[in-house]
Image (tube, rainbow, N blue to C red; front, side, top):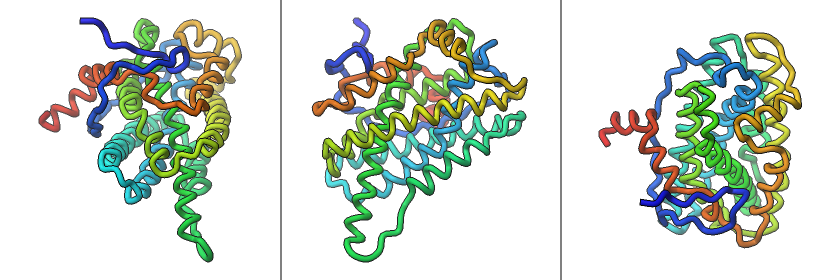
Length: 309
């Protein structure tokens, strides 16, 4: 039996021969961090913290996704899409709590994430949170703000699908003897991001779909995420429990060469497909590969066993 087709989010533009519909469901995964080393990529503080930025950003970010999509649910007129959105909400809620567990571990082991996470919390809860609209056209302005945020989630999900595809196809991390529990967390999460990669985009298309709004949000999200990631790496390196460090260009070059991580140019190119009028997330990545990993993930398998599946 031939292996499922997998298309890179950057290098290909065809449609993946994947299942048309996958029922999205939340998996109540649990992770034990008691044996997690400070540098879970062995002897590599930079790559460890490059990936640790996910734990700083995702709990608050994904709680925000849940809030926005829960608010959008009553506006959905397509029952299949509503079912997908409910599955998306369930998955994102567990993603947030799973990464929060890593933050709690950091805090208990001399790496206090609060100064950085506090800024992320302000961004999602205050700057991008609900707003009070009163006076003329209050309902319309409230709906427009909801749709604007939905477009923002769709842009962010373009990147999370890329990261999920990347982590599922990074054999160099296996040969580097990366902590297996952390690698399973990243791949379980990455697989679910690939699995539900089209939901946010389809919700935005259903509620509004205006091309210029979609492009505007990507042009805001892309540089914003790059800046937050850079600041996150700098924060983690400066507060490393084993000693204060500064990120260096040679560390980034080494990580790219050793683990086949994308360089800045490839990340820039990642924006291009999203700007095409005919873009759809299903054109990139592999649902089959994601589902196959979820069937073998230790955390996902344990969750299914607890659920009696």
